Amino acid sequence: MISINGLHKSFGKLDVLQDIGLELATPGVIAILGPNGSGKSTLIKLILGLVLPTHGSITVLGESIDHSYQYRKYISYLPQIARFPDNLKVRELLDVIEDIRGKSRIKASLIDYFGIETFLNNKLGHLSGGTRQKVNLVITFMYDTPIRILDEPSAGLDPIAMVALKKLIEEERKQDKLIVLTTHIIPMVESMANDLVFLLEGSIYFHGAPGELKRKTETNNLEEAIAKLMIRSGTPIIQSSANTYGSLLNPKMLKE
Image (cartoon, rainbow, N blue to C red; front, side, top):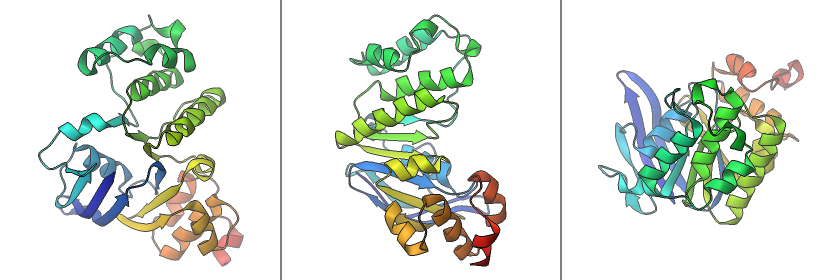
């Protein structure tokens, strides 16, 4: 579905991504992980055509994205921070989306599913962060596309909404869709991801199933596996990344 070959991206003298090669050909949930600054968001923006590569190529469903925008109709995207005018009401925002993309057959059911019906006449600027995220999720899933790209989809969600999101992603997986997500919620990755891509300093350090990573690192859970992976890489980012992924590192692991 998504093919990436020899991808480089630099901003001035800063190399953000280096020689990325990735084949996301099989439907399922693919988690893109890595510490802050590893290139996750840049990779997503490149796939979406929001920034241009320095070198390399990307194809989506067999179509090169170079100088093209038509392929975007096959992708639904949830940005990490969705910026909409605060003075718009929720209902007005959803109407604008339909004016652009056409009527959604499942909008009403998604509104009910995420429990935002009572907020439809509220302005976006008056919503809590969690409710705004529910609105963003409704927009993301309003249209039936073969590819979903979700950047930190669980941000701000309460436990009930989190369960609802996971069930929805699972239903999408059963429909043979490709769901690419970034998240710092490692248990979510462990329970849902078919494959994970781990980026360090702009390069792919691991690509495979979560179980494969645990076997290679001889650990029983994914948090410890990722911590060991980072330790073995020798990257100077390891120390600062402990806070990014929670209590991944502990003295015993550092001695191993």
